[in-house]
Length: 106
Image 1: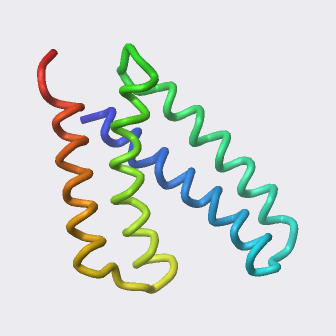
Image 2: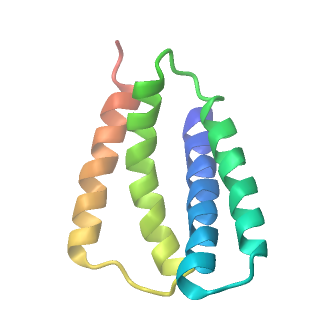
């Protein structure tokens, strides 16, 4: 359960970091966004090193599904856009994969 919280926190910091760059390059916001984005991306990378996984590839696979679901939450809460039914179906498929990789005994 602790790892799941770390993955969710990592997703927040990656999405915020990338969104900061989006703000600067696509929306012509101030260059301070680059500083915030860089700092956020460093935190994201650091957090991924704290999960209990023997292999980076497996950790990244789990993270990928959580990132997708988190991105749809970002879409709703930060960008005030609603995910459509296919976004939800796709995220559901991804989260099933996450749970299989994360919780199935090896």
